[in-house]
Image (cartoon, rainbow, N blue to C red):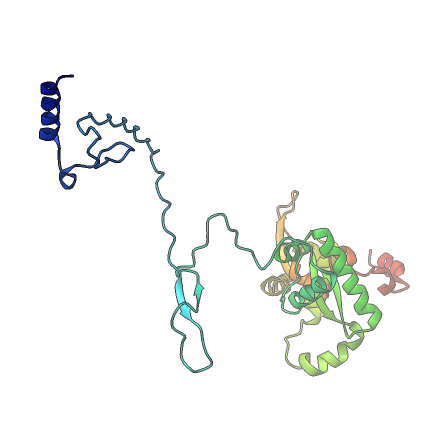
Length: 293
């Protein structure tokens, strides 16, 4: 290289030189040197293409906020409530339960213990004013009717074995507590004597004829008693001891029978439990029947 070419090259370098405090930092990894022998005119490297931003999935809808619980300040024994995070919470007002929960009934269909079942039956039997059936008791206690019947039989047998002054027996298709017959005089003296309207002798005779001959017509009752019994029949019907049950096919006369109230008052389950008449008939009944023919 000649001296003239070297001087022109040095002049060009001097003209292109930039002081360090005016130079811009290079984007490349290598720092810019402030040495005089480094060529600062070189083109900076091209920046790398930035990566494409990742596409985030669409966020799901946030769940509905639950009803806020009401904070209840803790009691400090009369010193006032505690303030701050020390508090208990109670469910929201309105009595609403979470979805899917089932309210438990106090009376469930599960099997009751034997002692609890006996006590429940006795409590009901003490307040009934008429015989109650096994089906009704089974529905109330939510127990099988077979178990109710067996439990009532055991209760009745236990009262009899213990010699209680009352007994449990079937009457009018149901169950009810009754005083024992051997203590009837004491019960009559305490409650019944002079405080009830008794049936007349005619009414008792007519009622007995209806009980043993039912269904029976009024003419048949009058023929058996030997007197007209129309007035007595009306009295028995008004007291609910006798009722009409159809008509006789041949004559069209009304037929009469005893009612459920009759069975309840006598403590009978059905008319089949009536005592037989043979022991009460006189010895010469056949001779008396022949004489009246």
